[in-house]
Image (cartoon, rainbow, N blue to C red; front, side, top):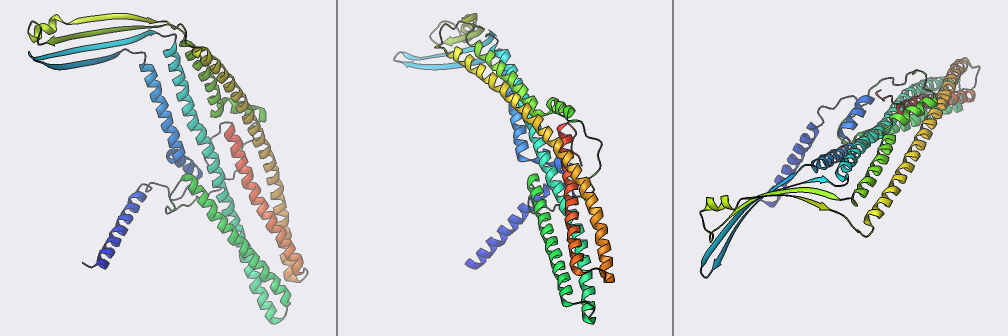
Length: 438
């Protein structure tokens, strides 16, 4: 077989192998929705996001630490078997031994109990870190999702404007041919149409960029098709919770505050563990053993029976001087408690400020939405009148184009204000414990 044929065969085999791999990988995404709504995006991210899954594994690891801390209070049990053979000039000597040993800590200054409490706090903190990360991911997904809806609605309106411009250019070309309008008027309309087309293309590019941003947040492969549901997620909501109530609710329910509260308890417990090292340790130990020696009198079973012994004992270890290790550890633990309390106060302050900022953002966004809606109504009606006057020859082209530009600005401001108000409302409600589902 020639080298060329071998290369072709290897290339085809590699292509087939890669295609099979892609098919196998894509099969993992067969159950994905064809069209995504916001709730599906959030649920998918909570289940499949790499960072969230890593935090979940850390939580499971903390759970195992708790299990090990609880098991430390149980007795241990070890078995041993020995077999020796020694060669002397007089002959061979063999021996064997069998034993069981067990020990349990009866008292160690409360270290084991406090260690269990610490591991329990650590597990709760690990669980809350998952919830906190889910909250952050939810906010990011909501913002990315609403950006897609914003640009898509903007594209819809821009297409209408472009269609109108194209119709006006077509009509103006016919009027120019018969001499009813000047060349300058036709050029102005053609320039407006080109500008409308450019604006539309820019919006379409932004739409694709927003789709990419959401897909990257969901960590979906590029080859997986992705489409967002066509739904009106911008709805008038019930009146907002007042600021003081919202701040109190956030302080009671947000995972970042619960984490800091648990951290204070954890550090307090760690100080008790540090104090335990200066206290006496009382432990109980027991053993069973037997053996056999070829040079001893008696058969194997008799020797095992005769040498069988049992042992039981108490051990009390009293620390006398540890070169100030315990005192230093206790002092450092006190510092950690103070640090944890400061962190708790800082977290509460940051959270209340964030809720207040969200509240002001909602108030401002709602005011801007009302103003933008009113502005759009006026400019829409003014544009309609300007178009009618242009057709009747009452208005000139410059005045009409000025009015159209005002309408475009008002339209884009309205769309932006509508989605900004929706996003800020969702964020504010989310701080108070209202889940984001649509």
